[in-house]
Structures are given as C-alpha cells and as structure tokens.
Length: 601
Image 1 (cartoon, rainbow, N blue to C red):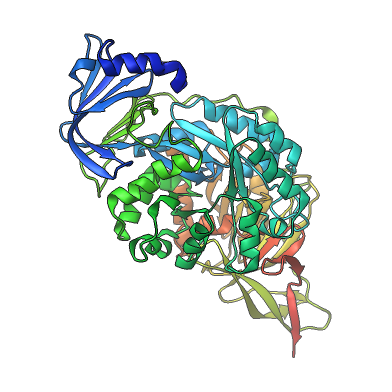
Image 2 (image 1 turned 45 degrees about the horizontal axis):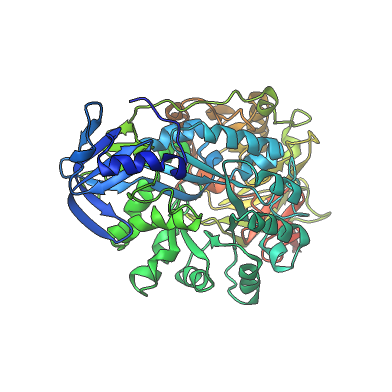
C-alpha cells in the first residue's frame, strides 16, 4: 500500500468523516480483533478499525460499510488490537545508532512513538548536531519527536563540553516542526538556585506551549525538591524509590519509571500504583538508555511493558503508562497513544496481552513490521564529514599519561574511589587504602584506574582517578568516547599500557568502544558519528556490542550491562562521585574534590 503523506487531523477530517459514515472506502480495515481501549480501560471483542489518510476513521463492531474494492483488509482473528507503544524519555545515541537505524531496530518491537532528547550529540556538535538528529527523525515511518536539549554542559563549571547550549538556541529550536519540548533539565542545582540561564530556557519552552522535561537526581525530597518543581519541570525519570514516584505525582509532575539496559527503576516505584493505589494517569514508562544489543535481542518498550506487568501491574494499566499517558503528557492525546478516531493509525496486533508477542505493527496506516521483520525503509541523512571527525586527542597517549603521582614521601594513601552500583545510575563515594610504588599510587584488589581523556579540543589532557565494582582481572583496559554527558573519553583499566592502547585505538577509528587485554584488541565497536553512533545496520552494531560484553566477562566483569555503567562515570549531575575534565567531582556537594584523602603511615 502506498504511503499517504501524513495530514493534520483538520486536513484529514473530511475524508475521515466520509469513511466513518460509509460514503467513501477506507484505505485499510483491521477486522475482528479485541479492541484494547486505553481511554476506558476495557477489552472489547469483535471490533473493527477503519483507517484513511494514515489516521483512524472508525472503530466499531462492524466496519463493513467502510470497505471498498481497493480497501486492504487485515484479519485480526481474535487478536488484541493495541495502540503503538510510546517511549516518553530516551536518548537515541545510547542505542549507538542514528535515528534511522534506531527506528529500524525498534519498529518490530511495537514502538511507534519516541520522545528523544539528543543531548549527547549536543555536547559534541552543539545545535547543528541537534538539527541533524531532528531532521533524520522526521524522515522515519514512525513518530520521533525531539526534545531540545537543555543542559550542555549538564553542570556548568564542573565539566567542559564540545559546545554549549544557550537560551537563544532553545528559543530557536522551539520553532522547528519536530520539537515537542525541552529535554531533561539536568542542572537541577541551577534551577533550585534560580539560575537565570536555566529559568530562561524553561520560560522559552513554556512560552512556546511545550513540555519541560525534568531530571532531579537527588534523594533529597525537602525544600530543594520543592524548589525544582516550582521551576517548571513537568516530569522526572530519576526516581529509584517508591517515595520518589509519590513525591513527584503529588507535586503535579509525571513520574517516569525507566527500564533501560542497565537502569532497573520500575519495580521499586510501581508499587505506588499497585500497592498504594495512586492514580496511574500520572505514571509513565520509558527506557532512557538502551544500547543496540538490548534493542535487537531483548526489545524496547515491549520489554518495559512486560516488566511492569511482571512487577504486578495490571496489563491495561501498564499499557496506559506506555501509550495514552505519554501522549497526554506531551499534549498529543488527540494525535496518538490510543485507538480512537482521528489518531494516527499506530496499532499492534498481539495474541497475548501479558507475554505481548508483537505480531503485526501498523504505523500511520501502513504495515511496517510482521513477526519481527521490518517491512519499510528507514531513510538516512547524509551526515557531514566533520560529524565523523570529532575525536581529537592532540597526541599519541603513553602509559605515563595514566600515572597517578603520590604525595612526596608517601608509602600508602587513602584515596577516593567511584563505586559502581549495579543496575542503577547513581554511584557510591568510596575510599580505599592503596600502596605507593616508585612514587606512584597503584590500584589493587577490586580497585581499577579510571581516566578521562579530553577529546574535543585536542589538549592532550588526562585526568586520573580510581573506580571499583567492575571486577576486572589481569592486564586490561576498556575505553569509550560515549561518556555522558560531556562525552570526552573514559578509560577504565588494570594496566596503564593497555589503557594507552585502548585510548589510541579510538583516536584512530574516530570513536567508539575498545577493549584490550594482555596488549591485544579483544573487542571494538566503531561509532564514527560524533564518537557516539554508527549508521551501520543495527544487527551488525548489536553483534559487536555482544562481542564487547563477552570480552568484558572474559576480563572478569560480572555486572549486568556494565558498558552502560562505564559510559555514565562522567555524568556529573548524578550522585555521588564522578570524574570530569575538571577532576574528581563530589556530586553531593557539586564541587571538585581531591583524589587523595590522606597519607597513611
């Protein structure tokens, strides 16, 4: 069936009315299914859906009057007819894929709408990078709405990015056709302190009548939280406890519960609905960060939906959290998120409401996937050459660049250590007593070295510190130019020679992830676009990510999706301890702190 250019509801209304009345034939009719109505929370068997102009014209017990000689008919055969799934908060770049390849990966899983914040590329390429992501998103056969990034840098004064986003950039972007709101306001201390720049970005978004995304990554639910809510963010996805979700919805925010590749925050918070009985209309499901291996092998929003159901949520309530609640939050309830007249014809056919096999996916009235196989093209942009040349090391790195000199005369020191927490974004601020050998502080036991290598301006600067929790053994190192949010290069290793090898390898290939062990390359995922993404096929990228995971395990790592933990070690807006180009950052106090706590006897 030839795709119709998507018209607005107002433009399509004459045809929709004519089809519903039986005066004109529909383009497509889905016949004989169970209508999953997310407005009334009902299952209505033996219903039909008539579609015209890529929108729903009629939903009722018999659409026979809408069928003409050229109408395509799909027999639902008693299957469930669900709205296409919506991801309320996510970063395309975390999939290591461009918007086109991300769409190709998730369409077979039933995702038909995404609300993407491209703040990763904003840190590397600025407003131009956002525009490139926005433009490729608009080419796709599903709905990818862009949230204009708000915080590059995420914490001014605590990191240096490739570019900075200004209130003027935000105001300009609000006029772009695919911009749906402001991306997560990560600089929550700035909002709490009344920072004029942050408040100006929020104001520009509100003047445009669009949604302000939130990010309050603190367990403090006292006056600071209330000040943040007063600043205007309409949602938050950083909750990790039931009380976080409760506090947000009580203040008129939407609680976004995330299940990404490594963030498992649904189970602890969904009890606010399943046990405390809070109104589920203000709860939304999202992924935040999913890498390509998860997308290809495990799923996307269908994975989140199944997980929420497994956590005790009623399937229809969970489905509302992944469809109509999301649409309403962004002011698009009359446009998508349900199977009802006028909405975009984004529909899933599934034979089981709990196991949720995604058997047929329809987007804008066109069958886009069948039984896990995509049926449409996802057009690519021609990315400019300078977007593929963003890793500037300034020199060839040596093992000596990763040395940590000890205070004069010290034999042992107590050092601050970043503690990785499995399946959560926050870290722990730990301490470790470490030996000094030949004037250098050496990692030992479960403690590894971590380094941030500046890669935007070619300064050759390396900041060194310590990290614990990966469990690496033997001489090895892993380097990544995906390092939220400033996206310098993060190197974690047990051996300085391997750290230099991994870092230089990424300099040579233009970015990505590399793991070396015993002086040999064990895994490489090339991410040439901004050092963040590949425009290769999602399946090929996922295979390389899988090989990386195996290499990490062979090096002793047993964490779930440890790559995601690695990539967030520079995120200086999530407590407790992070690394940046400014040094080691105490994110409970939002200040640079010393690596060495004290010299021991």
